[in-house]
Length: 422
Image 1: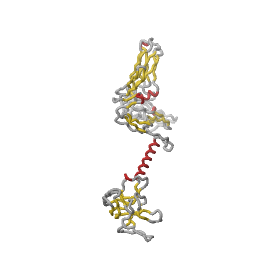
Image 2: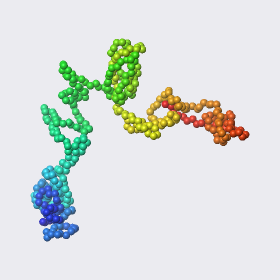
Image 3: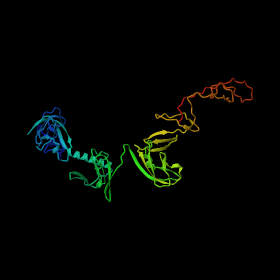
Image 4: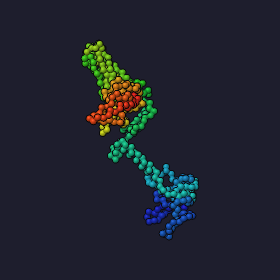
């Protein structure tokens, strides 16, 4: 060996190195040093040489794999003891490649010595890409619930038919992504389509040919449903099913049309609209059992809230649509003045619970004084509902004679202002 030779591990001898003998070798060790600064260790054979494992060292190089530029990775060349540039496009092997270091000087052609920064390592080009690709495929398959180890192989292909790409051999799953910039969409056998204007068209086969049916459109998110019903004694209540009730936005008015289908009634009308349906009555207080058809146009809810009741030791909680809980106080009916503040505008209602009390903003009207009953005279005043002094002293329950105490003034009861009960 001589200074600048590239060395690799000799797999046949223990703790021994030899000159590289082929391109893209894996077991790169270093370069024979030209002017070592620090030497570590002692040689064990008569062919001992100082090997540089790190630092700036002259190295034999060849331009067989292309001209070498500053910064190129250097790997073993086909010429014994020489280095060449690493080109990932020419690395067709499926193994790790040992890296000698990084070129610090260029070599345009032929062979010679160049200064290099020795920093051994490995590059794992094609096999690493394939491994990453396989891992990504396995991750996506696992999300879709597919076991690639037991999956049945299916060939998917795309064909060019009359200028159109035809996808055959399986379903195309976009995994939650969007289909962008599409002009039209056409269903199987042209049974349905969405045209360039966004109109949904269904095609039905009739005895006279194909009939196109266009989906109803609305400037708002509305839907239509209908059925038939019958009066009972001139009146009936139509109740929507629970699923339909959940998707209707009852904050918007329902549009209801009723049409008689029998002749015993002079006419019918919708007398009441409810959150569960509507009421139909006969004109002029009729009492027939006429049949009729009805159609409802309703605004669809943007989101459906799911309500759950959760029992707890301190009371009940009502969980509404996203998990926010409103705890109900079992003593709320006994303390009507404790109001829950809310930014919404609340209108007072006429009905109040029987055990509730409305506290007015005006001062309370005067009442007749009430005597205080005590077992013994007390120096503390007895609070009553009026500021006026008591007319008579409280009677004493003891048999022994005692002096009559002075009249005890009643404490003033503070009446706080409160919002109207709702």
